[in-house]
Image (cartoon, rainbow, N blue to C red; front, side):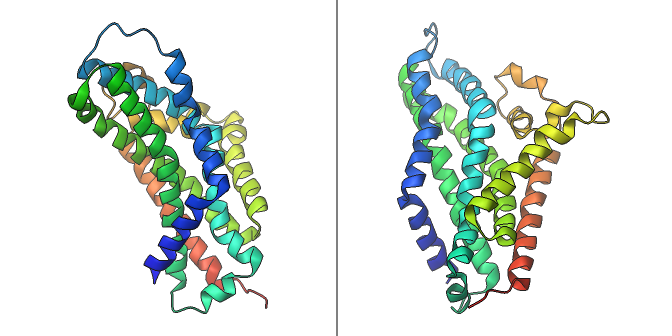
Amino acid sequence: MIGVLYSSEVSRILRARRFKVMLAAMLLPVVVYFFTHEEITEYGAKALERSFQIVTSEFMVNFWLGVIGQLVAIILMSDLLASEIDRGTIRLLLTKPIRKSEIVFGKFLAGMTGIAVLFGVPYLVLQIYGVLLYKAGLEGFRATFDEALYALGVTLLLLGALGALAVLLSVVVSRPLYASLSAFALVFVAQFILPQLPFFDNPERFTLNYQVGVLLKSHFTLHAGLDAYKGEPRMTALFFIGSIIAALLFTLLGIYRKEYPD
């Protein structure tokens, strides 16, 4: 039953007009790169790999996992359960032969699939354009495939944590718009307000885009600029994995405890 729920939810997400607008927004950095990249002085797979690491990390830190990307993920994930609760269709869903845990995890996985498409398509377009630009051919595509896949994995991990938080708040608030605003406000305070208190050292490390650099530096070894990001990638990954699990468990608890009027 969870497979049916997952597939129907993915279909609904991908067909939504809002999703297409989000995808266009995520493609914007790639379109800008088409017209603003520097003149190529060296061709081949190695030059492509170095350039791809530099460009991808800069776009991820400054745009894709910056405020815009975070807002997109929160809006998408907040709607998953809140829309069902707001319309009253959650009661119909609960009467079907499906566990509440399957509802929560099925919805979350569907949302993560939407995020994978939203960010995976721009990463792939950027990679293919780089292969053509550097005349690297199949060798260049293979050389950058791991980097593109790792970048997508980092994206899913970090935005998955925000998404899980948004899903949790959507059960508490029960309105998609209010859930989105609540999640974004909480994330904004955690990243930009609390770190300004005088007893926090290196406040930039509390921002999500800083942690992007921490995670990327372990794999993007040709981009020396990532050494400026101080932190242990494994511990960062474990923290966000734990955040996702904890948020989903609290969401499930909220589903069990919440009463849905007729």
